Image (cartoon, rainbow over all chains, first blue to last red):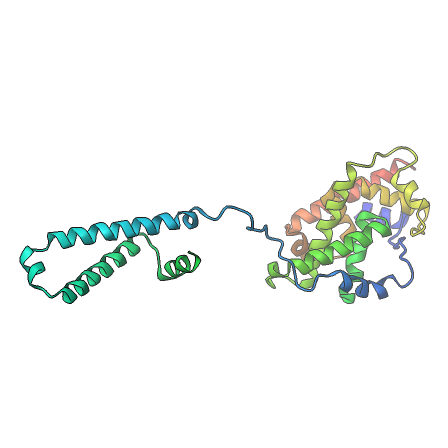
Length: 126
Length: 154
């Protein structure tokens, strides 16, 4: 390339920049002192921001789940034939109710996509 | 670090021109690299990755400072360099730096890497994430502008 040659002949390729004596020798030490011990993530922090909507809604969802369970349990209890309620021993009835409650609670939890971890966390926090 | 710091320093210095600024940018480069290690996935050589950061930091530095400095007859790039203790080039070498400094960022960078470092276009392409064709074109344009710069002063 003629123009490139022209510049080369006119000016050359010498490096005209200088550095202070010992600059590179001491640079590594100086730099190591500056680096934080552990890399600091450059991602923006989520602290201080409002927790996600789902997280804030959780107490309400649990309340709704409980209310639903209560309503369904009562409805089921009431819809059972009178004879069976009267004749069954109380303990058996309680177990039945509990099983029903468990099943409906599980259903409700599934429906709302709340898993056990969420429930444990909520219980631990409250 | 020593292995990389010299090469990076010169890439930076050729863009920002003064030792003081080059020192600042070099430190910022290593800080950024250190904090951004998570983002390095080994898809390029570490030296390429570091150079990329160094060049971006250098160009950002220039952009930030451009807003502050106004060039007058006394403070031309060439004059500033001749007055700089850490520049021992001739008048014409100072003028070459001035010509380079007047180029747009991409041409400026490509010219430095090709003319002074004699970097292969394939390596440059990896470094700047640009096609070789584009880089060659940028270099041709830069060379043309610089030679015209000198011819007009002859």
